[in-house]
Image (cartoon, rainbow, N blue to C red; front, side, top):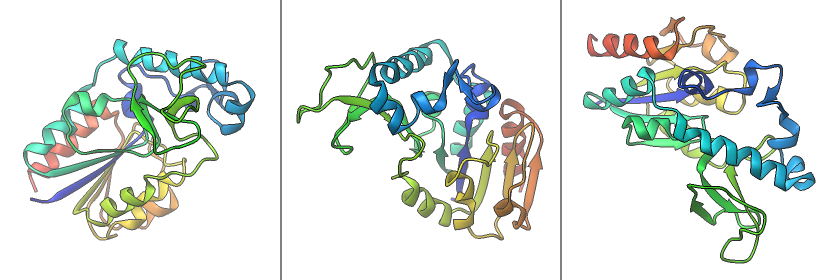
Length: 230
């Protein structure tokens, strides 16, 4: 069974109603990114950061996977599918995909502010005073701007194993995720689904690139049809 590796970005989640700061003048739900998505913001005002992510977590219960998510789940009937997502929501899981690697963390988890390997399920709010088993404050299990991306190496290993590479709903502007395809064999088929595709330097070098300038909700289904017809 051929291995399909899929890199997904904010665009696929936006179609389910999850807002992305890159569509709104650098603000994320009316907050500066520097205030809610950096280690410095956390040091300045942890209560604001916790409340921001508590609201994002609560929003997950108001949205559902869309046709793009469901088409990727359906692809598992015919291929070995690994999702590498830049998104911190759980929509891929809820759609039915079974192999998902979150590059930038997960809203439905918390972790120790001191010991990053201490990670816990999180269904409700994280509050000041909520502590890990070693007595340190809990924080969102999110990779903030300026922090290392610990799952990049496993993601690169998946990319290197890909027989087919699909990119969905990302502007390919956020590094290092935007360069993930360089770890794949350049001669395999690449598919890029986005209503406003931006071909970055890495992707421009792929000889077997198919660009589908559509939203994920329709474009992913088109790719699935193409793969099943190969």
